[in-house]
Amino acid sequence: MNNLRILIVGAGISGLALTKALLDRDRGFQVDVVERRADDGQVLGSGLYLPANAVRALRGIGVAAEVTKRAEPVARQRLRDHRGRPLAEFAAERIWGEVGPCLAITRAGLHEVLRTAVDGTALRYRTEVTAVAEDGTVTFTDGATAAYDLVVGADGINSAVRRTLFGGPEPRFLGQLCWRFIADDTEIPGITDWTGRLGAKGRTFLTVQLGAGRVYCYADINSPVPEAPAGDWRALFGDFGGPVPPLLEQGANAYFAALYESENTVWTRPRAVLVGDAAHAFSPSMAQGAAMALEDSLVLADTLTTIPDVPAALAAFQTRRAERVAWVVAQNHRRDKARNLPTPLRDFTLRRAGERIFKANHAPLHALP
Ligand SMILES: Cc1cc2nc3c(=O)[nH]c(=O)nc-3n(C[C@H](O)[C@H](O)[C@H](O)COP(=O)(O)OP(=O)(O)OC[C@H]3O[C@@H](n4cnc5c(N)ncnc54)[C@H](O)[C@@H]3O)c2cc1C
Image (cartoon, rainbow, N blue to C red):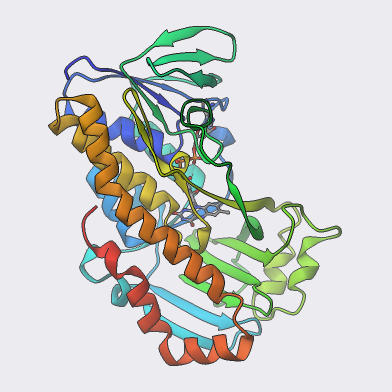
């Protein structure tokens, strides 16, 4: 498969990670990457929690040391009610054991590390793919076309590669809306690691310490429609206590998003494959989006390197990934259901068995992908 001409569509987490993993294999792959954004400066300015299997995949890609320099360790996870009363608390090590540490980083920080790691690659910004054909012909927004041996759709939940070549169901609204922002916590004591504060009616306010006086705040609510409610969103969390009110003061310009999921059952065509959110986008409940995107990249680079026939390598990729991804989807659904338990039952369950539940929820992800 030397000189295989590969186009990676999308320079997000999965596209950049796959580029790095393929170049590391040093098999003469000719990799082009196209990205519709103008440059990395436009990456959404919020944070990412990277569970231990995501950090392990970053080690596999060879960038964990650089990521760790820019990240903050997440040593403990705490669950509290909306007023700050403890529901459960445990060391991340108890959940992940030998898999390794968990980290928190800005999205821009992770992108910068991945982007720097593929310096020298043919990466074109402001270049958008509009369609891909079965024979590997790619069409761009300006009408130009190019032919590739393999096209990788790493173009996120609304993937043009998936839409034009795979068909498949449209992303499904999950009945949740969220707001994300990074706040300065130098004047707000007591914010460390990862703390989820759970309100009634499925409301969550999560803080993840990013270091250097910055904290990533993520707030979500249930909603029957994918539109932001009228008025200032922060009023929806007016009954939350502890550090939430001073953090909300900084949340006027938070990024709003309606949450969707999409799961294609078929990720491969003879000359195309989907990775990351293009193949499977989840609810953020398990924070496994980046981890699954990174694992996909490693496994695809592996199968393309070890199996000479491209369609067979792609089929092996999906076989290796399908069960694990399906498990994460099901786990997200279970968690999303649990957020709507009556508050007394939810609190009782977490107080009695929070650590045990978290441990069981992550155990299958200890195995290598
Ligand atoms: C609210 C929220 C919070 C989250 N929090 C976490 C978290 O804490 N931890 C975690 O692990 N995951 C989290 N995730 C999930 C995570 O962000 C995604 O799973 C991850 O970004 C997927 O990476 P990707 O590269 O597959 O897709 P993306 O990051 O979406 O990248 C796709 C890239 O393709 C480009 N593109 C799109 N279409 C085209 C086209 N036609 N032509 C060229 N380029 C194109 C886009 O500009 C983009 O740069 C969260 C998701 C959401 C919605």
